[in-house]
Amino acid sequence: MAEAAGAASGTRTSAAAAAATDSAAVRTGNDDGARAERKQQRKYKWLVELEPAVPSAGGGALRPSLSPVYRHIWSAGGFPAPPYGAATCYDIWRASVQRNGSARCLGWRKVMKDGRPGPYTFMSYNEAEHQVRLVSTGLAAAGLRRGDKVAVYAANCP
Image (cartoon, rainbow, N blue to C red; front, side, top):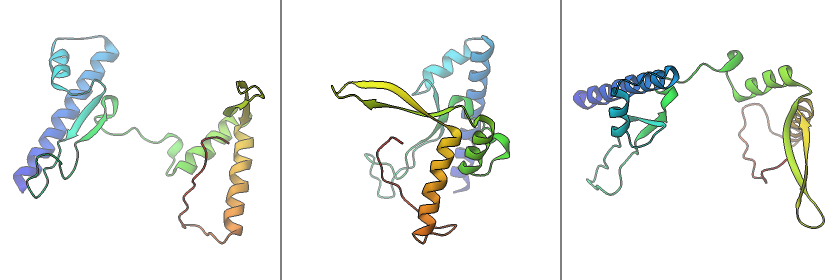
């Protein structure tokens, strides 16, 4: 078991190191041939395999128990820190509203009478925040409280 963990961490380190070298070479334009060799070994151009697939306990080679773990090549060494010290998606949203209040946030096209898409209409960050507050007020009025879980099944539009 310890050997497997050591092998997995060794794979993770080498993949992360290769990705870091690749991304540095891409940014600086330095291609010393090693990057091209590693690129041929990778399955995908912009993804790095951090952990291999885990075989199923029954020995079924057709379906692994867990699929490989991939990450974008620029994040191979770890994820970037969240902006503005955010801890949640809502923190990122609030910071965006504060920074970009009157700027365009959400755009959509209405369908014209002849069925063709019309011109774009936009909602600002402040207007979108107002809509978020209306929805959250409605959920609270329905009895939901902080920490409750909600699933929203809706069309992909405002």
